[in-house]
Image (tube, rainbow, N blue to C red; front, side):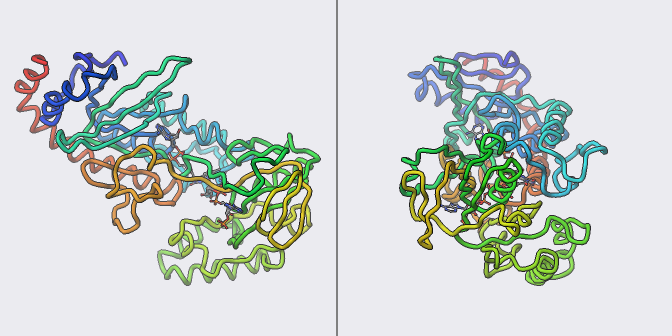
Length: 444
Ligand SMILES: Cc1cc2nc3c(=O)[nH]c(=O)nc-3n(C[C@H](O)[C@H](O)[C@H](O)COP(=O)(O)OP(=O)(O)OC[C@H]3O[C@@H](n4cnc5c(N)ncnc54)[C@H](O)[C@@H]3O)c2cc1C
Ligand SMILES: NC(=O)c1ccc[n+]([C@@H]2O[C@H](COP(=O)([O-])OP(=O)(O)OC[C@H]3O[C@@H](n4cnc5c(N)ncnc54)[C@H](OP(=O)(O)O)[C@@H]3O)[C@@H](O)[C@H]2O)c1
């Protein structure tokens, strides 16, 4: 960070214009923090937490607005979910036009459904194009709005071998971009801890190669569960997939057109419930009844369910055919694991070698953000809030509306516009007051 000038324990960038809030902070902080060796950094502009697609999209839009920013990322690379926590055969499951980030389209030669590698390549070139250089290996452990100073105080920890470094970033705006899938959900199931075979979560699964010839229990039937069961089949493993409740399975395409695109188009003209009805009729015509294979449909339609509970419908890319042929066995909920066996709620017992938990993800916001007005306990912005990308006191959230990459792009554009407007206005006013603030800093 050679572009910061250290002022005692505080670092300020050479050309920064110091707002009045920082003066208040400077007056208060020696009393509060002099006991600690933590370094403080004043960020001229917003701090963005997370360098996934959402954080990068906000960075790109801010760059266009001429607003400087700092991106803090706990991993050692951008898009760590895609680079480190997804399986090899993954492809975007929505057409590319719904997955590209603002201001830079996918290369023209990309297929309709880009592969994980292509998507990562795109994100790398996106970060380069907009000169987004995150501070890697810095995990945000807490962020709190300081009412007295009217500034955000964001504390990070980075560890390098046995060295642990703590930094506190001080800023006017905080953009939460840590994602809906920050933590793996690993349910507690009786006997699972003692199970002798391999147990992996979907975020650790790379390929079915290592499971060849094995009897694998896939727990969960979302897009991950379905696709991992298919991958296991393709690598000569014997998967059984646990379906404990119900699931909407839709074809990825209907009459050659993406189901998602068809739904988006219909929603412009007709109500959601009617779109759901049409989708279900068309799915039935293409896939037939899924219920007879143990895949009971929820009582509410796929889009309404997504809106109400955030549950994503499965877009089938071949698993259903393997279920029909019996290569993937559908089984009901789990009662307990015992030895190398699993007892199911219907009384059936299965011998298994390995378990893949495709049991989903959760937000990690409640672990580090000390704020309860905007974010609910589940780590998502409260559903009662209209603009779910904007909180109070300079707090923003990107990528938390359960609308995938297109939702993140929408949020990013609005956030950057909002901050950009205030930034430009502030700049005008603060420039006139520069001598006073510069004086304050140099005295410190
Ligand atoms: C297997 C899988 C496939 C998917 N496929 C699609 C798809 O095809 N289309 C689609 O639209 N969506 C898809 N999604 C949804 C997915 O969440 C989005 O595509 C996208 O990754 C969201 O971007 P994000 O930046 O909001 O979150 P993430 O990609 O999760 O990025 C968040 C970043 O924040 C960092 N971070 C987290 N906590 C901290 C912290 N405390 N301090 C510092 N950094 C932190 C993480 O390391 C990470 O790099 C998929 C999700 C999964 C799990
Ligand atoms: N691009 C792609 O192709 C792709 C691939 C994978 C994932 N994704 C996306 O990634 C996100 C996460 O998907 P996901 O499939 O990982 O998670 P998910 O949609 O949250 O599904 C989790 C599944 O686990 C089940 N489950 C949870 N706990 C269980 C337990 N104790 N016993 C039995 N079953 C249990 C759930 O059942 P209940 O419904 O009963 O709770 C559900 O079927 C989604 O947005 C998805 O669309 C995209």
